[in-house]
Length: 360
Ligand SMILES: *[C@@H]1O[C@H](CO)[C@@H](O)[C@H](O)[C@H]1NC(C)=O
Image 1 (cartoon, protein in one colour):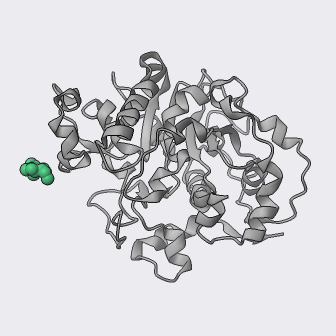
Image 2 (cartoon, rainbow, N blue to C red):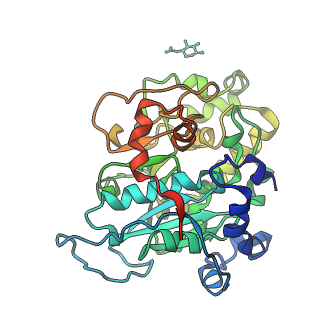
């Protein structure tokens, strides 16, 4: 029950039990991630557990405008006109994930054309999602934390060690084969622009797209041990890698599956277990595998770092330029700072999307 202790205090333990406990027993067995029984939506719907109060207010129903080609149609996940978005529903970051979804729907001209793929590992959250967002197109996927637990090494901040942080590595396996492109988003961000503009990003011949930060000193993302070992460091030879943040990525799942990038990421994680080649959590393997091979995306789509420094936390300002997405990466989270009355100025931009609050 470690997750309860780590739970950062936005609802009481009693509330957690009411909302989540019916589902704790309903997970498929350990090897679920590789099996075909990944979507357990049906199971949940028939669970029949009565939930009388939910921690989130119901959002308005977001409908397509007249400009959208399809009007009020019920989509199946394989429909070609859909925009696919993957987000984790980590109990600890649930409030952030819900706000992220809310922000996406609010700024979308065709919100009904969006399909959400939620990655979960601890509990059944289907009722919570469908009660909070009526008519949302979504599916839940069980991500087995045991799959990565042995691969995770300690990092500078314990939140970076949460197994669900690594679920993004397995999207190509988890999602149905008909889903050929996915936007992966972290839980500590909000969009203030229409996600369809990000969706149509051209990836060229690349497998992933993300905003790159070439002024950041790339050397510092890896340890001296890494750079001194020629066998490791020559992985970058012939490449000009730049730092990028893995909290906002557009991924070509067809290419990912074809090349088998999941295995390449896992290989670096295994090396890290014994050699300590980096300090951060799930990010460095992406730099190792994709650095210098990333389709650049405009920086407006990841105004990151608003959570402040990884260790101390502190208030950060926006990077210059336009803003389509605000990302509270770093140690501070806006919902925690707002609740504790120690908000940073930009946290007020997150607040309008917050749906937390008891409803009957
Ligand atoms: C990057 O950082 C490394 C180690 O901290 C340093 O030796 C190197 O000179 C830096 N490079 C640049 C271009 O600042």
